[in-house]
Amino acid sequence: MKGMGKRWKMMEPVPAEAFEAFPEQPRLLASLLWRRGLRTAEDAERFLRPSWERDVHDPFLFNDMQKAVDRLMTAIKNGEKIVVHGDYDADGVSGSVILHATLKTLGADVSVYLPHREKDGYGMNAPAIEKMGADGVKMIITCDCGISSGKEIALANTFGIDTIITDHHTLPPELPPAYAILHPLREGENYPFRHLTGGGVAFKLCQALWKEGNLPAGHEKWLLDMVSISTVADMGKLIGENRALVQYGLLVLNKTKRLGLKTLIDGVKRGDESLDAQSIGFRIAPRINAAGRMEHADAAFALLTAETESDAALKAEVLHGHNKDRQGATEKIVIEARLLADHQSTNSAIVVAGEGWPAALCGLVASRLVDDHYRPVIAVGKDENGKYVGSGRSIPGFDVTGALRACAEHIVKFGGHPAACGLTIQGEENFAAFKKAFVAHADTLLKDTDLTPSVEIEEEAAVHEITQGLVEQIRQLEPYGEGNPRPRFLLRGARVATTRLVGADGRHLQMTVADDHGGRLKLIGFGFGERVEECAPGRAVQAVVELDLNEWNGRVEPQGRLIDLKIES
Image (cartoon, rainbow, N blue to C red; front, top):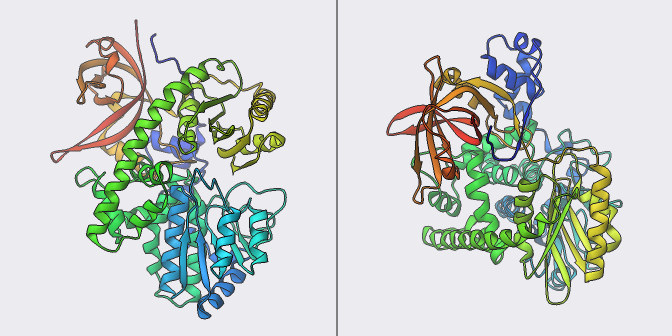
């Protein structure tokens, strides 16, 4: 068999009781429900049909919510200056839009501060706090940051500035001296859902303000377009409340009232398609992120708050341009990084650094290397002063931010969560010591882990089983994302019927497979064009695919997207 070098990891078969639990569901859907931890028809109903009333919790369940709301309502009444301090990624920008819109609706004197990724780094910084103090700011609301900014919040306190933290990142050993902290992972926190993203926590504060301010009930749902972007972009687990927020958010996103967002969408939308979580993850969020990566996140915030169509069009063009530049620059660095990573492929973790690599692109580079090697990766850029700044990405079961904590003596600053982190190291000696310590830590924690890149497969399916009706039923599992991955199927007993190259440069492979029971299924393999000669008609094939419906010229038919392919020799 000839494959693409990845291990195919087939999940264990589900027990017979899975089909007894969901007797009215097709075999494949019943199995997928069981694998997602659902055990009863009632569980399945809650999962497949999220409810606003049932699944979206009362924001005042947060321990500090009433305290935060009371302080904000006083600030609004007294005309105090309020600053929303966001982050430069799609989560932080989206949350800042949510908070800014709500506070403006309540009549607040509010502005937004987003740090510069290269000059300011992640989180709060002293110069910005000092300027806010000089400008007479009385309140800061953080969004997607703040929980690791104890020194900066203590500094704000000396200026008489009260800080409300809304964050979801890994908690430090000691909480900052903020006026109020809204964080779902805080020890002793009563809020029942622990997986909100930064924008999600910001929305809960806005929900509470909406109630306290007696604003029109239900109208806060128009904020959900930004909540869905925030949650998907930051890989929030799409279970429980997040699932409801994203599902309702997608409804709002498809009819958003934001001129800038609508203009951005028009530039990436394909015909009359409905946007889904994948649209956010691969088309919308990268363009919002591109502003902070290539220039300043202010450009994304300005687009999302644009008030005229002409202004929205200009700002959307800027973001499209940033995204194109980001793609080109990333590809160049990935080539360099892969050469460095190849020399470390026997280690349990990979640490790469390059002269002049923009810190803004290092997270993307780390992600690509994780895909290549299936192990934790740290990628940093080195400047002329010997400062190393970058990001890390991880694999399931390895807390990359916890690993940084274990190596903290070599690091100036770091933050993040188990799957992703950012860090700053000063000096070549510290970098060398960090690299050694980080790899040693990974060697210890991952010594019994198989680090072969793998493709995880949920179920086997015969070609003739895959009908339009089945795919429509499986699509009930959407929105897909962290905690609810798009199901992958192994096609067995198939043979190649037709093949052809597609795309402007012939890089993609389109093929039809058939089985002995009369089944036929079209497959599309993006980047599989070089394998066209292997796929001669009549050859037996095994394929890992994700299923969807292809709609073209009024015709709807099932289609598989190739993830991996093996041809019998």
